[in-house]
Each structure stands twice: as C-alpha cells, then as structure tokens.
Image (cartoon, rainbow, N blue to C red; front, top):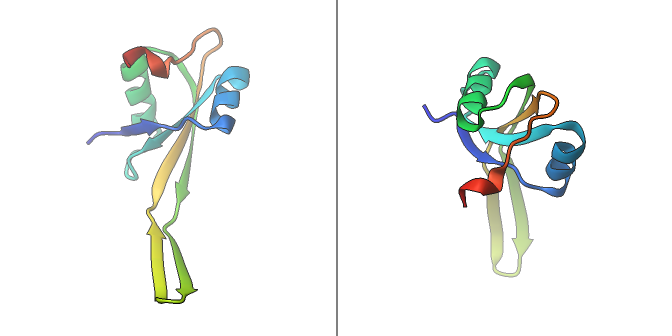
Length: 96
C-alpha cells in the first residue's frame, strides 16, 4: 500500500512549512497516523513531532445550463499535516 500520494503545495501549506515546520500531504484513505509517520520518516529522513489527519468527503455539483443539466464530482481524499522537529525541514524540490 502506497501511503504518501503527493505533497500539497499551496500558499497556506507553504507558509505553514516556513513558519511552523508543518507539511501537508495527500495520503491513502486507509492509512493511520503511525503508518503516515513511518512513511514520512522513511521517505524524507526527518524526525516527526506530530501528525494530524483530515478526511474530505466527495463533493457533488449540479448546474442547470442551456444544453441541459450538467453533473460534476470531486473525489474524496485524506489529508495529513505533519509537524517535523525543530531545525529539520523537508525539501520537495530536491528530486526534480
């Protein structure tokens, strides 16, 4: 099971990484906090202070247009906020 799917790189996540040493990841929906902690430590070689997780549900949207009714859906995902120890950081751009 691949636990880490991708890092989240937004304005809010970047500011939290600079100020509070917190990094955001999209993770597998079935992964728990211990598995996420071990995966981040193994992938990036940092010490983890805490892990917080959030489950986002499926969002469905319906629009009435000239050509008829249009349905859209965004998938569900799980987000993890990982706080690393003081003095350590994760460099997402080193593998590019």
